[in-house]
Image 1 (cartoon, rainbow over the protein chains, first blue to last red):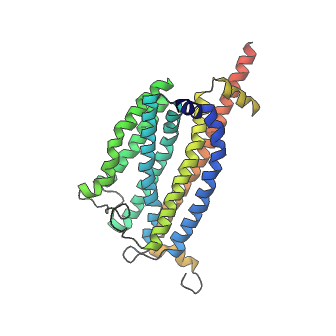
Image 2 (cartoon, chains in turn brown, purple; image 1 turned 90 degrees about the vertical axis):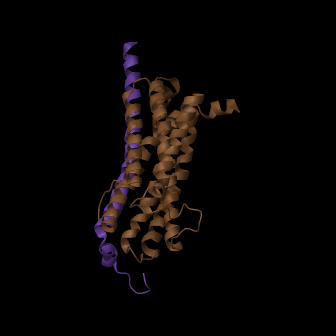
Length: 245
Length: 61
């Protein structure tokens, strides 16, 4: 088992294998994303309260879910890297951060653009919005630590520790709408009751969430391959590979 | 799409919320495109860096 992990997690093996995997994520991401948008714009009915503005939901909610999901992936990978010294885990964590930050940014901006017509303001310092903004800063903090520390192992340790400590923010974001009195509405889909959303709205929403997830899977591999090349830039396998290019 | 002909200008108007809806989607699209372009450029940078290092070492020998 250990030997298998060692082999699979060797950066060279990962570099070769991941190239084959990427299209299996990227192409379905595109197809499902386009279909989800089609259903979201042309099949989903107009909301009786919010009119057409609610259609922002099809990117806002999946992006917000991704911002949390990627953070957990990043923190777990960083933890595996810290505890078992598996170099590939640190590579995945480092590759996840900019994508997670992107989705967090999208969730914040689309939320803001949705808030203006519905709440009458682009921004309010309520618990949900503030904790999501803190998530963005956690991603930035991780990336800043990665970029500013020259020694890679030290950089992984410092940024990994930040990522793990920052995990406390994840349940805070999720439950913020229950624990505090917020302007942001409560959970619509991720609650134990039946989701309180029309099925023709729910399906495109879930399809967009799947498309975003597949997009992340493809892009984290692309970025992790770069990261693996960069970290092993003085090793023979990278030298041999580059000479062939 | 209520059976009859589909009205595109009505579609783009988004019931008066055009600015908010299309800015949201446009920005998201831009972020996604950036997330595709950036790693492609990063890859070229890493490869060039390794190539330069190899050349430097060959010159020194």
